[in-house]
Length: 240
Image 1 (tube, rainbow, N blue to C red):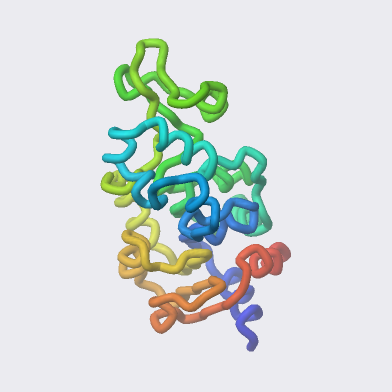
Image 2 (cartoon, rainbow, N blue to C red; image 1 turned 90 degrees about the vertical axis):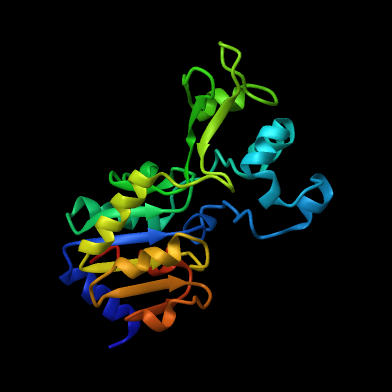
């Protein structure tokens, strides 16, 4: 049985699938992985991206933080690709229980997914750091430079920056979903960033599938490894 046939067979037979995804799920929607260093950084920014999107840099230099953030981390034109759509469809069929994502773009929800654990937050939620007032992405983009609340407080995106801890509630929920899954599909992540690598350890089943363009450190643990674009792989699951 070929790997694709095996994947289809397992999806057919499973009733408690959990999907864990990283940046590769969004790149096919035209959202570049901000770690993929291109000439832009060197031309436009005096600091590496990891520095700019850290908590201390955000506090120290909000102007430069927001310049980078609006330019390189927000993609209003992006639309869900076939991976997002197929996952939403599997959830609707009652096969998929949850999507756990490291992405902050909200594309899973745009595709119709309901149960989404956003480990790193979302660009669609923004809060005043003084009074807690909520602001949408459109609100933030309508303000020039650093966005401020009516109360005078600076508005911060609900995105986990470097040096900040993950939301423990969301993490625990993700662990619980993985622990009870009969099938775990991991896609579009190199599995080197914490907590992604650690989360796999909670899976108890024997249908661990990794779909990625490159080799990951967890390939040897997987029951099935598919090398390729996640959108193309998932588009073949549309008729399962």
